[in-house]
Length: 291
Image (cartoon, rainbow, N blue to C red):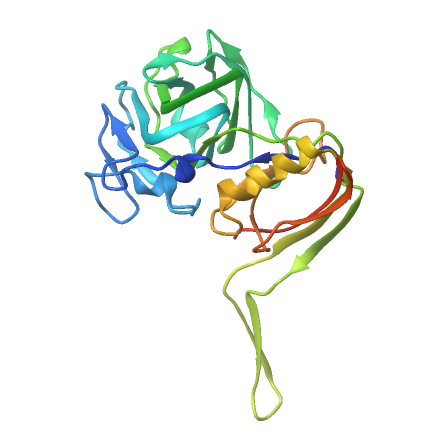
C-alpha cells in the first residue's frame, strides 16, 4: 500500500515522569505482573515491551477495575490512549478513559491487530463496546486534555449482563498528543524483508544450518521535502518525547482509510532537518519496527 498522511503517536508517559515503584496502579482488582509480582507497580504497561503482559484476575467476575496513572508532570494537550497487546474481546471487556477521576469524552475508538488496518468500534454512552478485537486499541479524545492523572477503565459486558469471560491481559499503554504533518512524505523507501534475527552457520563440511531468534523487521526512510516551521516543530517535539531512539512509539503511515498502526523506534540519534527558506524545511526520519 502507498504511504499517505502520517500520524505519530508518541507515548508521553516517560517524558512526564512517574514513581516507578508505584505507577501505574491497578484499582479494585488483583493482578500479576509478567515477573510474578502481585503487588507494586504494574510495570508491564510501561516497559516498552508489548509482549510482556500484565494479568488482571477477572475471569468469571463482575468486579470492574481501572488502570491509574499518577504522573509527575502534566501531559499537555493529550488526545489519545493506546492499549497494545490486549485480549478485551476474549475477556468480554468494555473500555472508557478518564483524567483525574473525571470522564473524558471519547470521539472514536479503533481496534484490530498491529501492522494491519483497524476497525471503527461502537461507542455508546462514552464506552467502547464489545467486540473490541484482541490486539491493539486506539482511543481518540474529543478535544484535548492537559492533566497529570489519567485512567483507563474496564467494565464487563454489562449491556448483555454477563461477567468477564477471561482474565484481562494488557501489554503496553500509551498516552499522549498525536502529531500529523500537514503533508504526506513524498520520498520514501520501505524495506520489507529485514531478517537480522536469522543466522546461518556453515559447518566445515559445507552444510548450512539456520537459527531464527526473531522474525521480520520493517524499516522506513521517509522524507518530507517541503514542510512549514509548524510541522518542523512537530517533528522535533516527537523526537524530544521519544528521546530519539530511546523510547518506541506508534505510527500510522496512512496506508488505509482507518488507522494502520506500527510499533517503531527511531534509528537516528539526531533529527535530519534541512532549512530551505525562512519558513520551509526538509525533514527525513529513519524508523524500524519493534519485534
